[in-house]
Length: 567
Image (cartoon, rainbow, N blue to C red; front, side):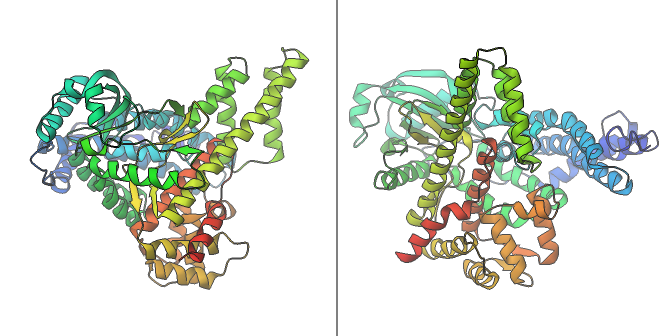
């Protein structure tokens, strides 16, 4: 039993769990009953919500009732067994005390191999909110297993697209109804292959006609544009998917429900591209008058011709930051892409396992030296020198991004709440392109200053528990008992780092949050804090991909201080 227990299950438990839990085999009545119950639950919980009223110039699709129930059944049929199997494995290994760390790692690795591809397939099949969640997961290699990162990374910008004919139909309808224009009046060229496809819409490259470009008052971005088109059923899918995911959080991710509620409120504002066009213009203006105006660029939208479903904007020539890092490393290694992937994977695993010791660094160097040993001495020296230069460049990019977003949050009060790696491009001139402002968040002045106080204190060398607790109350956090030490640790987790979980032996920030909730339950998280927290988490993950440990509050301390001085 011990040998096969947590992964393959045992002959003793297998029949029971296959009927009541796994639903993988074909047990006659029980599986039908469970699936029927799932459908019934889906019907009750996930009945289609009415789509928010559209104006007369846009069209949308409400998801049919049977499709909502089917999505619910597909989700729970595939996801519930995964969660239960992991929980069963953890319970089993806790009961069998002789499982050491290496044996536990082997068990979990086998589970990851079993379920990472399946989880990715479910996300790609259902799309909607689950793609957005997958994107966030793929950006956190410091606490998500590497196999999941590997399978989820394609969700950054390569979700299966909708047919080109459907996309052109949406554009044509929107242009005709809003502006009385035909498709060919606006676009001289339009690529059927999308540049990228995500959870809410997809982006195509196009070229504006010269006549239309002249009508775009104030637009100087050039005729080559990116056209962002919303999937017609996206809004209703998201609304119903949030219901499903809230139930999942209650079961598997307790502690995150308050955060998810505020996340839902903000994400549901993303279903109007006119908001994004306005946000792009605002952030672009802010950056052009900032200390970073020569280092980063934000695309200019054609705001006067943006609609709820279609956004036309300046197209940048560049590639995603992480892809550039891998391509440059491959070039340095004389075209050995597999070695480049292996080395980046070792760095991710080191961060994930909290093993960034000198021994681990030496192992990585040893791997590199063995791989390039057949080259001449001069070539080996050149490779090592270029490696050092590449690491320095990537670190500078990450530090720049941290500084830019700290400036946007604490000085401008307007920032991108979804800066995942797919939204950051390295442009041909070396600048960074910041794209996709669908989740642009605008802070109220009192929230901006309250956050600045928290971050300034958390980012200091000696943290005062009482000050952090006072600032958290001022921000609007609600705890059941308002314990100063718990509020301080929660602030550090949200806005700086999750190093505390390593000290306490927790495998993930989720485990740390659950532990803190046991000490003093967190009952409400302000929506402004949710998106600053999310930005902090995404940058920590991005740093992990590049082999960096990042403390966001420490990096943002100067901008937070400036905000308080200038209030």
